[in-house]
Length: 206
Ligand code: GSF
Image 1 (cartoon, rainbow, N blue to C red):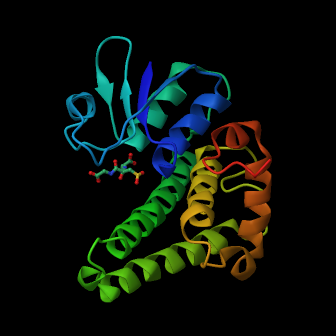
Image 2: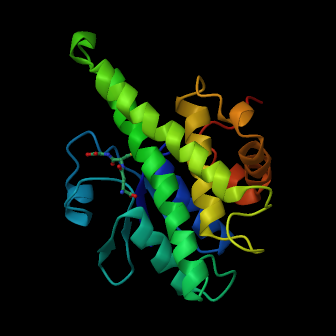
């Protein structure tokens, strides 16, 4: 299987962490979604990374579909619970984490317009408010628990770790670890996992 990805994409990182946790081999193909890219466009009409090229010649997107597919490939270390209640809880966590990333990416793109006069401060503020609200919801949902859903490590923990890691990479001014110590505790555990270390877009300076 080939994963069309970019090293800093938090959605692609979620896929890479899932593959690493399940010991599935992925051939990584760095694909810039912002340049004309026929391979990517053939794999995903939305022209977004990640996109997975499966061994039967098909392709899958978006990251939520890809991670569910990977989780089903091997019974080892199921990351999406079978039971409906916990399964839905995990998918809800993934929706918050991916939604936080959506807002962060829109805010970043808006702030990076070549002509700063075109950047909409209102749109940036609106998206940053979504980030703040998502962090508060994550913190409330996590409470004093070690893991996001139940007593086992799931996709919810991976998605949350990728979203928080993305904020560290791109929005260091958002001081979520001070505002939400329980998220900081959870992230410290995630960041120490081999799957997170191996996929960190900004490994600690040697
Ligand atoms: C979002 C992927 C995405 O926005 C998913 O895979 O979960 N819902 C999708 N990817 C970005 C790159 S990055 O910022 O992660 C992308 O490919 N953007 C190019 C574009 O045309 O928006």
